[in-house]
Length: 210
Image 1 (cartoon, helix red, strand yellow):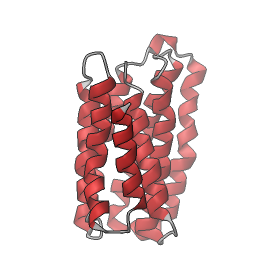
Image 2: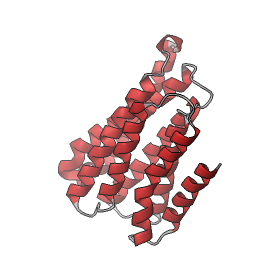
Image 3: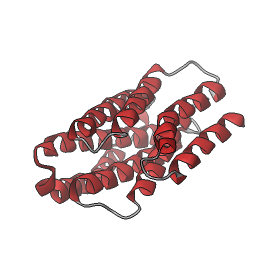
Image 4: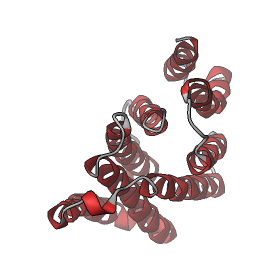
């Protein structure tokens, strides 16, 4: 469909653009609107306000992180994504059939502990005063991914599965971004961070389409 082509075209141009070029900045500001365009065009049910709020905060975060070389912009962007994940958690949790989840499945949430511990230990010396914010953000991101997993396991819609791999891609994207920003510059980090981030946002929103 045309809207999928528009989203894919914008994402491709962004990924292929030269670092910090006008094209890169322009397309970054169009990424989340193009995802929203897919949702509003294809989705046939009632609009999920919580989902759209999460996407809107992601859009604001994108704009702020265009200037992420300055600490205050990075922190502001982190706050916007933090708020976005809160709304995603609420949207996902609202569709979890808790009675369908066995007690054993709740232990799957422990899957995220190694991620949290690894990020904290690896960035402990370099994050400085930002460490508490990173820890809190990582916890919320893990909760969002857990909610996506539980939504799928509790018998969600046919598309509900896609929010879980989307949330895992978010973990990968933000983990690499944190290492690249606080610890050391990684070769090719831009492409990996943005490709996983774009796919993450798209898959989470796609999972709510009916």
